[in-house]
Length: 293
Length: 342
Image (cartoon, each protein chain N blue to C red):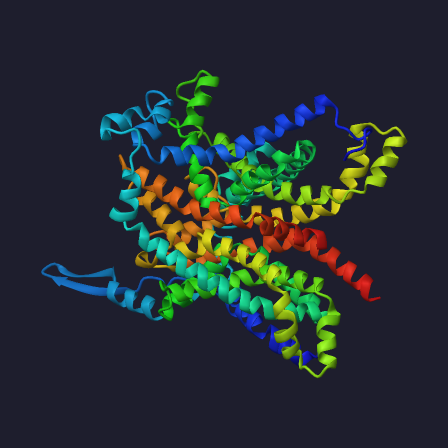
């Protein structure tokens, strides 16, 4: 927008800059505040006397001698063994992402290359499945899982998350594969490849951008899940999000709420890093579905 | 692609969806038609010096055994659907008979758990969705005008509320709006009311949840709209300008029609996601004042006694709700598809 006619008038420019800055504050302040507050004691984070205590750490000075304290983190990670939950989250997330991408790539590729009517219907069914509230599915699992002794184990949750993730993964990879020219694998087939060989040698080398983007969203779904993991995992196998909810349920007493604050900050940190490195992929993934319509 | 090849490619994915999405839906329907076994009664005769008396008591052991063996319970037909916890037909009928006005009828209806949940869920869905689209569009238009140096950081920061775990995001805000937290204190200061608490009144709880919903989802709308804005045709804008269109008219008649398909896409996704609102209510501890359909299912499953049939019946009703919500979209897509084939 370099032409003179197009130049934004000064007033509008200031207005939009102001609005954007306001939005930046609204979007980021809660995170900064909680990060800052997680190094204080509860008397500062929830200040009865003056909210500015949280800024200077007045009570923290009195109680611990320094302006910052790692007591919340120590309590959460060591005392309440939050590291177990973090480890479980790691396992669940890695396996969910790998398995859903494997299944999704095969299925998405098939859907993108089949012009038959049933491919359309499968996509529609996947859309309806995507809209199902997760908790209603969980209420279907619970009784059979109790019966067959499947309840409480990590693999059960992983496979359930993979399945819940499939509709979305299929849609997304389907639209990515539509963008890869059909001629690529057609010519490979002309040269004598079977469909699978064409997929293996021609499509797999060029599909990674789409797969990585889809993988990011599978990661987020598995990482952020509360409905499935809180209902299907036993206490010792809990992942981070249900563990945080557990902190609040059982131990809402002086000092312990800071464990939850520290755990919340710890669980947000990986997401922050994710956005830092994969901002471009996330944005392209969000818009991919929209542009296709 | 040949049918057979297609089948083998899609099989793993289809199998996963069939076993863990389609079957649970069947399981939910079956569970909702059953109810826990009644307690087994035994009649014992107590004979004393003044004659014999018959005494009925619960055979706890036999009951537990039967419930253990057949956890599904006995067939109950549609009984669970019409009881007080769900559609509550008799209560609704009574409320209709006893109504003094339409408002009175609705307030009576609101006291029934399922109708309260429906009221909240629908209000949340149909209030948050348009607000998200509006705010997202405003941010996108704003970011499009600011200096390029500010654009990257804005997008980075905007992604955070959207990407953060819903439960965690709502907890963060929940701590801030606490009467002793920073936003809570500030509001008390603004309204000059030291007893003001956002948690106390149902109305304020609802508003808090709406605000959270918009905060959480507006970035999604923003990112999609912002991408759409990059492809607005400069020629059309130029032409509009030459024809004397004001800045507002350019937005109204060129930009917004261009973004319309995106708005439809966003509202579809948002309707689906907002209808199943769940984690924020847990995070804000608002189950009592603002239950959603997902929450009442969760409470049935999480209680000391798990009420499978009750949870299942609510689930079935929720699924029906989702289908009704999606029906217009599905019909439209079907018509488009048929149009393409013919």
